[in-house]
Amino acid sequence: MYKIPRYGHTREIGLFFSEDPAMRKDYMLGLILVFSILMSIAAVWFLSLIILRILGHRVGCAAGKPPVIPAEAMGNNNKGSVNTDETGEFIVMQDDQSRVNRTRIVFFMSVLYALAACGVLIWSFIKLKSSFQNFYDYAEDVKDGFAQMPSSLSTAFETSTAFQTPKDEMVTASFRDAIILVEDLASDSSWNTFNESLVEVNDILASAVSFIGFLDSPTETWYIAVLCATGALAVLIFYLLACAWTSGKEGYEFAGETETSGNDIFLNFVGIPLFAFLLAGTWFATSTVFTSGAANADFCYSEIKTGDTALSFLRNLNFDENSAIYKQTDDYLHGCIDGISATMPGADTYDEDLTAAKNIAGVFTSFNVDELETACNGGGASAVMANALALSAELNILITDYEKVYDNMSCEAVAPLIQKAVYEESCQSMSTALLRVFASGLCLSVFGTIILSLRSAIGRPQIYLVQANGEERDDDASYLVESDDEY
Image (cartoon, rainbow, N blue to C red; front, side, top):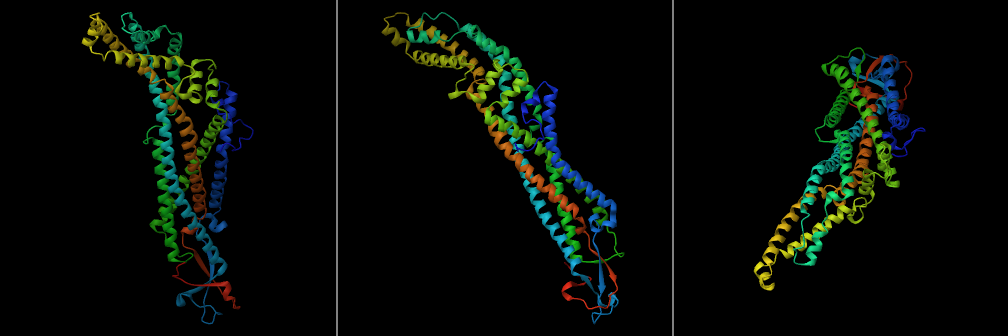
Protein backbone atom coordinates (compact mmCIF):
# COMPACT_ATOMS: atom_id res chain seq x y z
CA MET A 1 0.00 0.00 0.00
CA TYR A 2 3.03 2.27 0.19
CA LYS A 3 2.77 3.13 -3.51
CA ILE A 4 -0.82 4.35 -3.33
CA PRO A 5 -0.74 7.76 -5.07
CA ARG A 6 -0.76 10.85 -2.85
CA TYR A 7 -1.08 13.27 -5.76
CA GLY A 8 1.98 15.30 -4.91
CA HIS A 9 1.71 15.16 -1.12
CA THR A 10 4.35 13.69 1.18
CA ARG A 11 4.51 10.13 2.48
CA GLU A 12 6.69 11.12 5.49
CA ILE A 13 4.45 10.03 8.36
CA GLY A 14 6.79 11.64 10.88
CA LEU A 15 5.56 15.04 9.70
CA PHE A 16 2.21 14.24 11.28
CA PHE A 17 3.88 15.11 14.62
CA SER A 18 5.56 18.24 13.32
CA GLU A 19 4.92 21.56 15.02
CA ASP A 20 4.67 23.15 11.58
CA PRO A 21 0.95 23.18 10.63
CA ALA A 22 1.82 23.23 6.92
CA MET A 23 3.79 19.98 7.27
CA ARG A 24 0.98 18.25 9.16
CA LYS A 25 -1.57 19.52 6.65
CA ASP A 26 0.47 18.26 3.70
CA TYR A 27 0.59 14.72 5.06
CA MET A 28 -3.07 14.73 6.11
CA LEU A 29 -4.17 15.96 2.68
CA GLY A 30 -2.39 12.99 1.15
CA LEU A 31 -4.32 10.60 3.40
CA ILE A 32 -7.60 12.39 2.68
CA LEU A 33 -7.01 11.91 -1.04
CA VAL A 34 -6.33 8.21 -0.43
CA PHE A 35 -9.60 8.01 1.50
CA SER A 36 -11.45 9.79 -1.31
CA ILE A 37 -10.37 7.25 -3.96
CA LEU A 38 -12.88 4.62 -2.85
CA MET A 39 -15.44 7.05 -1.45
CA SER A 40 -15.67 8.87 -4.77
CA ILE A 41 -16.43 5.58 -6.53
CA ALA A 42 -19.10 4.79 -3.95
CA ALA A 43 -20.55 8.31 -4.16
CA VAL A 44 -20.89 8.20 -7.96
CA TRP A 45 -22.40 4.70 -7.87
CA PHE A 46 -24.94 5.53 -5.17
CA LEU A 47 -25.81 8.86 -6.80
CA SER A 48 -26.49 7.01 -10.06
CA LEU A 49 -28.79 4.58 -8.26
CA ILE A 50 -30.65 7.46 -6.62
CA ILE A 51 -31.13 9.23 -9.96
CA LEU A 52 -32.36 6.03 -11.60
CA ARG A 53 -34.76 5.48 -8.72
CA ILE A 54 -36.15 9.00 -9.15
CA LEU A 55 -36.64 8.47 -12.90
CA GLY A 56 -38.82 5.48 -12.07
CA HIS A 57 -40.63 3.61 -14.86
CA ARG A 58 -38.89 5.66 -17.54
CA VAL A 59 -35.72 3.61 -17.02
CA GLY A 60 -37.48 0.29 -16.44
CA CYS A 61 -35.89 -2.26 -14.12
CA ALA A 62 -32.82 0.02 -13.69
CA ALA A 63 -34.98 1.87 -11.15
CA GLY A 64 -35.22 -1.32 -9.09
CA LYS A 65 -38.68 -2.23 -10.31
CA PRO A 66 -39.43 -5.75 -11.60
CA PRO A 67 -39.04 -6.02 -15.38
CA VAL A 68 -42.22 -5.58 -17.43
CA ILE A 69 -42.10 -7.45 -20.75
CA PRO A 70 -44.62 -8.15 -23.54
CA ALA A 71 -46.16 -11.58 -24.13
CA GLU A 72 -48.50 -13.02 -26.76
CA ALA A 73 -51.34 -15.39 -26.00
CA MET A 74 -51.07 -18.72 -27.80
CA GLY A 75 -53.61 -20.13 -30.20
CA ASN A 76 -54.03 -23.76 -31.22
CA ASN A 77 -52.61 -23.07 -34.69
CA ASN A 78 -49.96 -20.59 -33.51
CA LYS A 79 -51.59 -17.86 -35.60
CA GLY A 80 -54.70 -16.45 -34.02
CA SER A 81 -54.91 -15.23 -30.43
CA VAL A 82 -57.15 -16.76 -27.86
CA ASN A 83 -58.01 -15.84 -24.31
CA THR A 84 -55.04 -16.74 -22.10
CA ASP A 85 -57.36 -17.75 -19.32
CA GLU A 86 -58.53 -20.63 -21.48
CA THR A 87 -55.10 -22.06 -22.38
CA GLY A 88 -52.89 -20.80 -19.55
CA GLU A 89 -50.07 -20.36 -22.04
CA PHE A 90 -48.37 -17.38 -23.63
CA ILE A 91 -45.21 -16.58 -25.54
CA VAL A 92 -42.33 -14.43 -24.20
CA MET A 93 -39.59 -13.40 -26.58
CA GLN A 94 -36.32 -15.22 -26.04
CA ASP A 95 -34.38 -11.96 -25.77
CA ASP A 96 -36.61 -10.74 -22.95
CA GLN A 97 -36.37 -14.05 -21.11
CA SER A 98 -32.57 -14.12 -21.54
CA ARG A 99 -32.29 -10.62 -20.12
CA VAL A 100 -34.25 -11.67 -17.03
CA ASN A 101 -32.14 -14.81 -16.67
CA ARG A 102 -28.87 -12.91 -17.02
CA THR A 103 -29.95 -10.44 -14.37
CA ARG A 104 -30.80 -13.24 -11.98
CA ILE A 105 -27.58 -15.12 -12.65
CA VAL A 106 -25.46 -12.03 -11.93
CA PHE A 107 -27.61 -11.34 -8.86
CA PHE A 108 -27.15 -14.85 -7.46
CA MET A 109 -23.40 -14.89 -8.19
CA SER A 110 -23.02 -11.50 -6.48
CA VAL A 111 -24.89 -12.85 -3.47
CA LEU A 112 -22.48 -15.79 -3.19
CA TYR A 113 -19.42 -13.57 -3.44
CA ALA A 114 -20.88 -11.06 -0.97
CA LEU A 115 -21.65 -13.78 1.59
CA ALA A 116 -18.13 -15.18 1.22
CA ALA A 117 -16.74 -11.66 1.67
CA CYS A 118 -18.82 -11.25 4.85
CA GLY A 119 -17.27 -14.37 6.34
CA VAL A 120 -13.74 -13.37 5.39
CA LEU A 121 -14.34 -9.82 6.66
CA ILE A 122 -15.48 -11.01 10.09
CA TRP A 123 -12.48 -13.34 10.37
CA SER A 124 -10.12 -10.59 9.19
CA PHE A 125 -11.50 -8.12 11.72
CA ILE A 126 -10.97 -10.62 14.51
CA LYS A 127 -7.34 -11.07 13.39
CA LEU A 128 -6.92 -7.30 13.11
CA LYS A 129 -8.31 -6.78 16.61
CA SER A 130 -5.89 -9.41 17.89
CA SER A 131 -2.97 -7.50 16.34
CA PHE A 132 -4.28 -4.23 17.77
CA GLN A 133 -4.60 -5.83 21.21
CA ASN A 134 -1.06 -7.25 21.12
CA PHE A 135 0.34 -3.90 19.99
CA TYR A 136 -1.51 -2.14 22.81
CA ASP A 137 -0.42 -4.70 25.41
CA TYR A 138 3.26 -4.28 24.44
CA ALA A 139 2.97 -0.50 24.62
CA GLU A 140 1.19 -0.66 27.98
CA ASP A 141 3.82 -3.04 29.40
CA VAL A 142 6.56 -0.58 28.49
CA LYS A 143 4.57 2.32 29.95
CA ASP A 144 3.82 0.48 33.21
CA GLY A 145 7.46 -0.53 33.59
CA PHE A 146 8.75 3.02 33.20
CA ALA A 147 5.96 4.39 35.41
CA GLN A 148 7.32 2.32 38.32
CA MET A 149 10.91 3.41 37.79
CA PRO A 150 11.00 6.79 39.58
CA SER A 151 9.97 5.29 42.92
CA SER A 152 12.04 2.14 42.33
CA LEU A 153 15.12 4.16 41.40
CA SER A 154 14.71 6.42 44.43
CA THR A 155 14.58 3.36 46.69
CA ALA A 156 17.63 1.88 44.95
CA PHE A 157 19.53 5.16 45.47
CA GLU A 158 18.82 5.07 49.20
CA THR A 159 19.73 1.39 49.55
CA SER A 160 22.92 1.87 47.54
CA THR A 161 24.02 4.83 49.67
CA ALA A 162 23.31 2.90 52.89
CA PHE A 163 25.30 -0.05 51.58
CA GLN A 164 28.54 1.93 51.46
CA THR A 165 30.00 0.56 54.75
CA PRO A 166 33.64 -0.28 55.64
CA LYS A 167 34.72 -3.50 53.96
CA ASP A 168 38.20 -3.93 55.42
CA GLU A 169 37.17 -6.86 57.61
CA MET A 170 36.56 -9.18 54.65
CA VAL A 171 38.58 -12.37 54.93
CA THR A 172 39.55 -12.63 51.28
CA ALA A 173 40.76 -10.00 48.88
CA SER A 174 38.41 -11.25 46.15
CA PHE A 175 35.39 -10.80 48.43
CA ARG A 176 36.58 -7.31 49.42
CA ASP A 177 37.28 -6.31 45.81
CA ALA A 178 33.88 -7.59 44.63
CA ILE A 179 32.05 -5.60 47.29
CA ILE A 180 34.07 -2.43 46.61
CA LEU A 181 32.99 -2.53 42.94
CA VAL A 182 29.39 -2.02 44.04
CA GLU A 183 29.45 1.77 43.95
CA ASP A 184 26.93 4.32 45.15
CA LEU A 185 24.27 4.82 42.47
CA ALA A 186 23.41 8.29 43.74
CA SER A 187 26.94 9.49 43.01
CA ASP A 188 26.80 8.39 39.36
CA SER A 189 25.94 11.35 37.11
CA SER A 190 24.57 9.12 34.33
CA TRP A 191 21.99 7.68 36.72
CA ASN A 192 20.99 11.15 37.87
CA THR A 193 20.56 12.26 34.26
CA PHE A 194 18.49 9.17 33.51
CA ASN A 195 16.38 9.79 36.60
CA GLU A 196 15.66 13.36 35.49
CA SER A 197 14.53 12.19 32.04
CA LEU A 198 12.02 9.71 33.45
CA VAL A 199 9.38 12.39 34.01
CA GLU A 200 9.39 13.32 30.34
CA VAL A 201 9.57 9.68 29.24
CA ASN A 202 6.54 8.79 31.34
CA ASP A 203 4.57 11.74 29.97
CA ILE A 204 5.29 10.64 26.40
CA LEU A 205 4.44 7.00 27.09
CA ALA A 206 1.23 7.91 28.91
CA SER A 207 0.13 10.14 26.01
CA ALA A 208 1.02 7.49 23.42
CA VAL A 209 -0.86 4.71 25.21
CA SER A 210 -3.84 7.01 25.73
CA PHE A 211 -3.79 7.87 22.00
CA ILE A 212 -4.04 4.19 21.01
CA GLY A 213 -6.51 3.37 23.78
CA PHE A 214 -9.18 2.50 21.21
CA LEU A 215 -7.12 -0.60 20.37
CA ASP A 216 -7.63 -2.06 23.82
CA SER A 217 -10.20 -4.70 24.80
CA PRO A 218 -12.43 -6.66 22.40
CA THR A 219 -15.47 -4.97 23.97
CA GLU A 220 -14.66 -1.61 22.36
CA THR A 221 -17.76 -0.05 20.79
CA TRP A 222 -16.27 0.25 17.29
CA TYR A 223 -15.30 -3.42 17.25
CA ILE A 224 -18.71 -4.67 18.38
CA ALA A 225 -20.41 -2.27 15.94
CA VAL A 226 -18.37 -3.56 12.99
CA LEU A 227 -19.08 -7.21 13.77
CA CYS A 228 -22.80 -6.53 14.32
CA ALA A 229 -23.07 -4.47 11.12
CA THR A 230 -21.31 -7.16 9.08
CA GLY A 231 -23.54 -9.84 10.58
CA ALA A 232 -26.65 -7.75 9.85
CA LEU A 233 -25.46 -7.26 6.27
CA ALA A 234 -25.04 -11.02 5.85
CA VAL A 235 -28.56 -11.61 7.23
CA LEU A 236 -30.01 -9.06 4.82
CA ILE A 237 -28.17 -10.65 1.90
CA PHE A 238 -29.66 -14.02 2.85
CA TYR A 239 -33.07 -12.35 3.07
CA LEU A 240 -32.74 -10.78 -0.40
CA LEU A 241 -31.58 -14.13 -1.76
CA ALA A 242 -34.63 -15.85 -0.27
CA CYS A 243 -36.94 -13.23 -1.78
CA ALA A 244 -35.32 -13.59 -5.22
CA TRP A 245 -35.47 -17.38 -5.00
CA THR A 246 -39.16 -17.28 -4.06
CA SER A 247 -40.06 -14.88 -6.87
CA GLY A 248 -38.15 -17.07 -9.30
CA LYS A 249 -40.16 -20.12 -8.27
CA GLU A 250 -43.46 -18.24 -8.52
CA GLY A 251 -42.73 -17.14 -12.08
CA TYR A 252 -44.43 -14.36 -14.00
CA GLU A 253 -47.36 -12.23 -12.92
CA PHE A 254 -49.60 -10.03 -15.00
CA ALA A 255 -48.95 -6.28 -14.83
CA GLY A 256 -51.75 -4.46 -13.08
CA GLU A 257 -52.82 -7.56 -11.17
CA THR A 258 -50.05 -7.54 -8.55
CA GLU A 259 -50.89 -7.66 -4.86
CA THR A 260 -48.77 -5.95 -2.23
CA SER A 261 -47.93 -8.30 0.61
CA GLY A 262 -46.49 -7.56 4.04
CA ASN A 263 -43.14 -8.88 2.84
CA ASP A 264 -43.17 -6.42 -0.07
CA ILE A 265 -43.81 -3.54 2.33
CA PHE A 266 -41.00 -4.65 4.65
CA LEU A 267 -38.65 -5.17 1.70
CA ASN A 268 -39.30 -1.76 0.14
CA PHE A 269 -39.43 0.36 3.28
CA VAL A 270 -37.05 -1.46 5.64
CA GLY A 271 -34.99 -4.21 4.01
CA ILE A 272 -33.58 -2.41 0.97
CA PRO A 273 -33.05 1.02 2.66
CA LEU A 274 -31.28 -0.68 5.59
CA PHE A 275 -29.21 -2.74 3.16
CA ALA A 276 -28.22 0.43 1.27
CA PHE A 277 -27.33 2.19 4.54
CA LEU A 278 -25.12 -0.68 5.71
CA LEU A 279 -23.48 -0.82 2.28
CA ALA A 280 -22.65 2.88 2.51
CA GLY A 281 -21.11 2.17 5.92
CA THR A 282 -19.12 -0.68 4.40
CA TRP A 283 -17.71 1.63 1.74
CA PHE A 284 -16.79 4.14 4.45
CA ALA A 285 -15.17 1.50 6.68
CA THR A 286 -13.27 0.04 3.72
CA SER A 287 -11.98 3.49 2.78
CA THR A 288 -10.91 4.06 6.38
CA VAL A 289 -9.03 0.75 6.46
CA PHE A 290 -7.52 1.57 3.06
CA THR A 291 -6.25 4.88 4.46
CA SER A 292 -5.02 3.28 7.69
CA GLY A 293 -3.15 0.66 5.67
CA ALA A 294 -1.50 3.42 3.63
CA ALA A 295 -0.40 5.24 6.80
CA ASN A 296 0.88 1.98 8.30
CA ALA A 297 2.80 1.28 5.09
CA ASP A 298 4.31 4.78 5.22
CA PHE A 299 5.72 3.96 8.63
CA CYS A 300 6.80 0.37 8.04
CA TYR A 301 8.36 0.84 4.60
CA SER A 302 10.49 3.75 5.75
CA GLU A 303 11.32 2.25 9.16
CA ILE A 304 12.44 -1.07 7.73
CA LYS A 305 14.35 0.58 4.89
CA THR A 306 16.07 3.38 6.83
CA GLY A 307 15.43 2.65 10.52
CA ASP A 308 14.75 6.34 11.00
CA THR A 309 10.96 6.75 10.95
CA ALA A 310 10.31 6.13 14.65
CA LEU A 311 13.15 8.49 15.53
CA SER A 312 11.69 11.13 13.18
CA PHE A 313 8.65 11.21 15.46
CA LEU A 314 10.91 12.33 18.31
CA ARG A 315 12.74 14.86 16.16
CA ASN A 316 9.44 16.39 15.08
CA LEU A 317 8.49 16.54 18.74
CA ASN A 318 11.65 18.63 19.26
CA PHE A 319 13.78 16.00 21.00
CA ASP A 320 17.48 16.57 20.51
CA GLU A 321 19.42 13.71 18.95
CA ASN A 322 21.80 13.79 21.92
CA SER A 323 19.02 13.58 24.51
CA ALA A 324 18.73 10.50 26.71
CA ILE A 325 15.23 9.72 25.41
CA TYR A 326 16.31 9.85 21.77
CA LYS A 327 19.38 7.68 22.34
CA GLN A 328 17.52 5.17 24.48
CA THR A 329 14.73 4.82 21.88
CA ASP A 330 17.28 4.31 19.15
CA ASP A 331 19.03 1.74 21.33
CA TYR A 332 15.86 -0.23 22.07
CA LEU A 333 14.83 -0.26 18.40
CA HIS A 334 18.12 -0.72 16.60
CA GLY A 335 20.82 -1.39 19.20
CA CYS A 336 20.99 -3.58 22.27
CA ILE A 337 23.58 -5.85 20.69
CA ASP A 338 23.87 -9.03 22.77
CA GLY A 339 21.51 -7.47 25.29
CA ILE A 340 23.94 -4.64 26.15
CA SER A 341 22.65 -1.08 26.20
CA ALA A 342 24.86 1.41 24.35
CA THR A 343 23.35 4.45 26.06
CA MET A 344 23.31 3.10 29.64
CA PRO A 345 26.22 0.65 29.84
CA GLY A 346 26.54 1.51 33.54
CA ALA A 347 23.25 -0.26 34.17
CA ASP A 348 24.55 -3.52 32.76
CA THR A 349 27.92 -3.11 34.50
CA TYR A 350 26.30 -2.44 37.86
CA ASP A 351 24.09 -5.49 37.43
CA GLU A 352 27.17 -7.62 36.66
CA ASP A 353 28.99 -6.25 39.73
CA LEU A 354 26.04 -7.05 41.97
CA THR A 355 25.82 -10.57 40.57
CA ALA A 356 29.56 -11.18 41.07
CA ALA A 357 29.45 -9.90 44.66
CA LYS A 358 26.41 -12.00 45.41
CA ASN A 359 28.08 -15.15 44.06
CA ILE A 360 31.25 -14.63 46.11
CA ALA A 361 29.22 -13.75 49.21
CA GLY A 362 27.22 -16.92 48.73
CA VAL A 363 30.35 -19.02 48.59
CA PHE A 364 31.95 -17.36 51.62
CA THR A 365 28.86 -17.40 53.85
CA SER A 366 28.38 -21.11 53.16
CA PHE A 367 31.52 -21.90 55.16
CA ASN A 368 31.24 -23.53 58.59
CA VAL A 369 32.16 -21.02 61.35
CA ASP A 370 33.71 -23.65 63.64
CA GLU A 371 35.93 -24.94 60.86
CA LEU A 372 37.04 -21.38 60.10
CA GLU A 373 37.87 -20.78 63.77
CA THR A 374 39.97 -23.94 63.79
CA ALA A 375 41.69 -23.06 60.55
CA CYS A 376 42.42 -19.51 61.73
CA ASN A 377 43.49 -20.61 65.25
CA GLY A 378 40.78 -18.47 66.84
CA GLY A 379 41.59 -15.44 64.72
CA GLY A 380 38.15 -13.81 65.01
CA ALA A 381 36.53 -15.81 62.24
CA SER A 382 33.15 -15.62 64.02
CA ALA A 383 33.16 -11.81 63.97
CA VAL A 384 34.22 -11.72 60.34
CA MET A 385 31.52 -14.24 59.43
CA ALA A 386 28.86 -12.24 61.28
CA ASN A 387 29.94 -9.11 59.43
CA ALA A 388 29.89 -10.98 56.12
CA LEU A 389 26.40 -12.32 56.78
CA ALA A 390 25.11 -8.84 57.63
CA LEU A 391 26.75 -7.38 54.54
CA SER A 392 25.34 -10.21 52.42
CA ALA A 393 21.84 -9.43 53.73
CA GLU A 394 22.30 -5.76 52.81
CA LEU A 395 23.58 -6.83 49.40
CA ASN A 396 20.47 -8.95 48.81
CA ILE A 397 18.25 -5.97 49.66
CA LEU A 398 20.20 -3.79 47.22
CA ILE A 399 19.96 -6.46 44.54
CA THR A 400 16.20 -6.73 45.04
CA ASP A 401 15.73 -2.96 44.83
CA TYR A 402 17.99 -2.62 41.82
CA GLU A 403 16.28 -5.45 39.94
CA LYS A 404 13.03 -3.48 40.10
CA VAL A 405 14.82 -0.75 38.16
CA TYR A 406 16.91 -2.91 35.88
CA ASP A 407 14.07 -5.23 34.86
CA ASN A 408 12.11 -2.24 33.56
CA MET A 409 14.92 -0.59 31.60
CA SER A 410 17.34 -3.30 30.47
CA CYS A 411 17.67 -4.29 26.83
CA GLU A 412 16.60 -7.82 27.66
CA ALA A 413 13.34 -6.55 29.16
CA VAL A 414 12.34 -3.54 27.05
CA ALA A 415 13.86 -4.05 23.59
CA PRO A 416 11.83 -7.23 22.80
CA LEU A 417 8.59 -5.45 23.74
CA ILE A 418 9.28 -2.40 21.58
CA GLN A 419 10.66 -4.39 18.65
CA LYS A 420 7.74 -6.83 18.71
CA ALA A 421 5.26 -3.95 18.84
CA VAL A 422 6.91 -2.10 15.95
CA TYR A 423 8.18 -4.86 13.66
CA GLU A 424 6.15 -7.99 14.42
CA GLU A 425 2.75 -6.47 15.17
CA SER A 426 2.66 -3.12 13.34
CA CYS A 427 4.68 -4.10 10.29
CA GLN A 428 3.71 -7.76 9.95
CA SER A 429 0.53 -8.95 11.67
CA MET A 430 -1.25 -5.59 11.53
CA SER A 431 -0.24 -4.90 7.92
CA THR A 432 -1.46 -8.33 6.81
CA ALA A 433 -4.71 -7.99 8.75
CA LEU A 434 -5.37 -4.51 7.32
CA LEU A 435 -4.83 -5.85 3.81
CA ARG A 436 -7.25 -8.73 4.43
CA VAL A 437 -9.88 -6.42 5.87
CA PHE A 438 -9.47 -4.05 2.93
CA ALA A 439 -9.70 -6.81 0.31
CA SER A 440 -12.74 -8.50 1.87
CA GLY A 441 -14.39 -5.15 2.60
CA LEU A 442 -13.89 -4.02 -0.99
CA CYS A 443 -15.36 -7.28 -2.31
CA LEU A 444 -18.36 -6.93 0.00
CA SER A 445 -18.83 -3.29 -1.01
CA VAL A 446 -18.64 -3.96 -4.74
CA PHE A 447 -20.77 -7.11 -4.87
CA GLY A 448 -23.20 -5.69 -2.33
CA THR A 449 -23.70 -2.61 -4.51
CA ILE A 450 -24.20 -4.88 -7.54
CA ILE A 451 -26.93 -6.66 -5.56
CA LEU A 452 -28.48 -3.27 -4.79
CA SER A 453 -28.25 -2.27 -8.46
CA LEU A 454 -29.92 -5.51 -9.59
CA ARG A 455 -32.60 -5.53 -6.87
CA SER A 456 -35.19 -5.83 -9.67
CA ALA A 457 -34.32 -9.55 -9.61
CA ILE A 458 -35.99 -9.79 -6.20
CA GLY A 459 -39.50 -9.25 -7.58
CA ARG A 460 -41.54 -11.36 -9.98
CA PRO A 461 -41.23 -10.25 -13.62
CA GLN A 462 -44.46 -8.76 -14.96
CA ILE A 463 -45.97 -9.37 -18.39
CA TYR A 464 -48.62 -7.66 -20.44
CA LEU A 465 -50.40 -9.28 -23.39
CA VAL A 466 -50.06 -8.00 -26.92
CA GLN A 467 -52.03 -9.01 -30.02
CA ALA A 468 -50.43 -11.48 -32.37
CA ASN A 469 -49.63 -10.03 -35.80
CA GLY A 470 -50.60 -13.20 -37.57
CA GLU A 471 -47.16 -13.74 -39.07
CA GLU A 472 -45.13 -16.91 -38.73
CA ARG A 473 -42.82 -16.93 -35.66
CA ASP A 474 -39.40 -18.51 -35.56
CA ASP A 475 -39.65 -20.97 -32.68
CA ASP A 476 -35.96 -20.50 -31.95
CA ALA A 477 -36.59 -16.81 -31.31
CA SER A 478 -39.37 -17.35 -28.78
CA TYR A 479 -39.72 -18.86 -25.36
CA LEU A 480 -42.79 -20.88 -24.42
CA VAL A 481 -43.92 -20.58 -20.80
CA GLU A 482 -46.97 -21.28 -18.71
CA SER A 483 -48.37 -18.86 -16.15
CA ASP A 484 -47.06 -20.94 -13.22
CA ASP A 485 -43.64 -21.76 -14.68
CA GLU A 486 -40.55 -21.70 -12.49
CA TYR A 487 -37.27 -20.34 -13.86
